[in-house]
Length: 147
Image 1 (cartoon, helix red, strand yellow):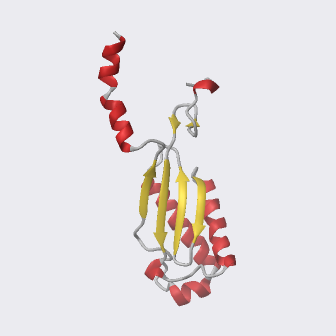
Image 2 (cartoon, rainbow, N blue to C red):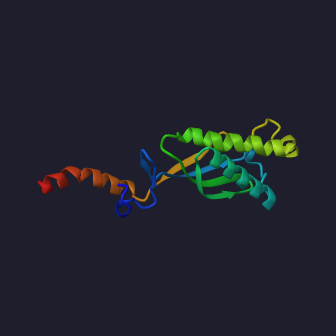
Image 3 (cartoon, helix red, strand yellow):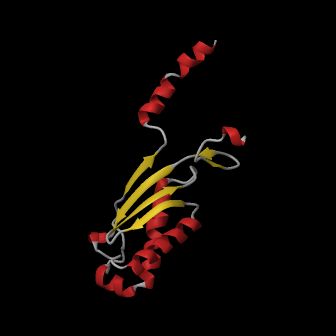
């Protein structure tokens, strides 16, 4: 699989495994407070999230910080759990942001929590579930036809 001609498009090759995992991650601010209402605050959060991602082997492929929620398209190695990735992104970004903005913490987040505890995580693929199911179901038939 290491031959350039047989490489899987968009896959990431490491010494021990190959992966092509992409996730859509969304989470909201606590109480849906509209915190990131200026370009400066939004860009600051983008920078923070990028630093956290870089420190945790998370690739941010696309990102948008809205006034009361965040959208990310991310990828990370399969040895990492999704829960650990989300915890790193949400937990560290909240800590850094609220430390830099005690006035925002005092007025909007007196509990010390920038983000709601909930989130949405959806997996993406370059094949539909039906395509993969058909491929798996056809394996025995295809093997028998070769013999």
